[in-house]
Image (tube, rainbow, N blue to C red; front, top):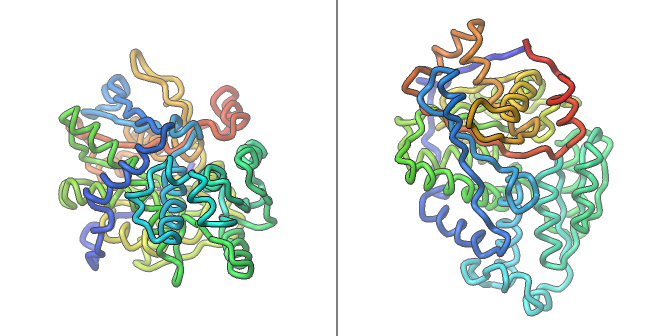
Length: 398
């Protein structure tokens, strides 16, 4: 088992502008998603018994396995970005394009035939394919080698042309982008690079519906988080949540920690070097949704400025989190969390319960007054692997 932490306390910051992740923008995007008839707020689970066991004041877990019936949060970013693309093409503000109008025959006739292209480890591609399908448009989705067949099949069910690419995630992104540029397709990717940042920003903003829901739920509970733990692949979701929560609570009132797989910790390495670091190779990890080696250029700037700690964790921690969330104590509610969704929770629950990690606990400042916030970003999107881990003890933690 491998668990490392790096602190950005006292490091040089450039005060990157996070106004695009503010309260007003989040509320407008929430209203857009709320126009979808299948929209329903996902639960913020209060694990009271787990908090007592681990010696903290409160543990809250946002359960995204209920999102739009797609078992993961990613559709929020993809659907908003696709909506923005359509609005721009029509010259209409997205606020004037609620779901029913967006999928209308009138809009379809004005748009003509469009093809949306993306690369994915699973959840993002399914969200883009779903959004394109609702618009009666085409989508092409590329997945890295080793992609779980269930994830491939779920994307295909949304009408997409799915190709498992013989390369890692970042190589699949480059291939998909080249194809889009050559054929006039629309690239909808949740990572950004120089020259491609508008759509990734929209995707990041789309994720704020999740953050907005967390914020309003905590306001209703009269609770404010002291520590937020967010898992990262390219860093789009983590940056979106970080930016919004900092805007709402203030940067001095939150300790935000980013958690990644130890085999492909590009954000962690970038934090150490204080610049964008690319991690190549096969990215072998059970945390498929986090198996990304090239940080989102926009998201990274947010995280380097506003996240406090960065953790790299081996697969055993994610597996531990899946087992604990799926087998709650007492009256605590069960959370079915996939390999990527349980990564942060698994790492921190070990930090709080294992004396071996007391230095990390102290560095994070965790104590009996701490209010911990997690996001389980996906459910059992690979059901066979979920069973192998939760039922049969695959990737045992000690």
